[in-house]
Length: 341
Image (tube, rainbow, N blue to C red):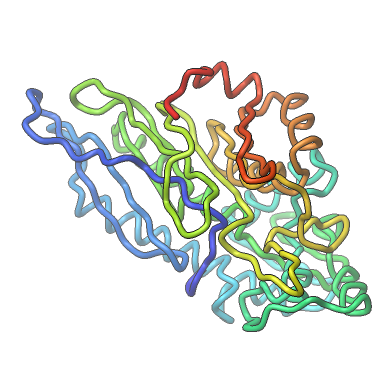
């Protein structure tokens, strides 16, 4: 957060500008920079609803506060001070940080470590870290050294403090945007807003309908390099959407492709044929984290895990020169097999 924050893929909200509405309510929009990318909020404003100027000030104040807490691009952030501390350290942390760590730990346990907030040393080893400028294939010794500093099990929360039993460092890129979407959405609802579309660095949530009664329609981006095309279009209400993919941030060496998505178990980039996975969940944080989990697990293990846990997920797999799409039963129940393609 703070400088370029590479999201693996961007879920694109379809245009929602309205003209000539026959009702009094209107769609207000405000946008801005955040986390090295952008955010966008659209909401249906009633006569008593909050003004967009107020909402933008409050949204940007929250995003700036979150940046000061968990950015890995600024040395003065709370989490960077924790990262620089030695093993055995406990530090007071904001409720937002503790909430993210707690939620991530539960999902890490559920996925047997496919999600790990302490994966930063492995990202650095492969040249994908925030302070590394050269992508590279690490030696076995480099990987072994990095893996000694990885393991979410070394984190704990004790009396409101975040503690570590090993010299691990945290990176919230897999959940921070989703958490921010949840918080901004909750604030809108506290102010009486009942219909909105919140998007932060590609993570989004939509609730309600537009003034003309039509739904918020969302395009899931196809995993095609150099293009922005829709793989599938869905209608979203009271759900969040997150897509993770391996085709935006990668490098090639000697004809082999290395994705920025690293399997914490092996310490190496994923090698399977899953190109992207989209997750729908009422919580944007969970959708954000689970899309990473399923991408790490791959097409077979990921599908089995998603079906077992009742996750609404949409998989796009490479097969020779084509893409094959599959979805879980939960996704089909939400959006149907006949969703626009």
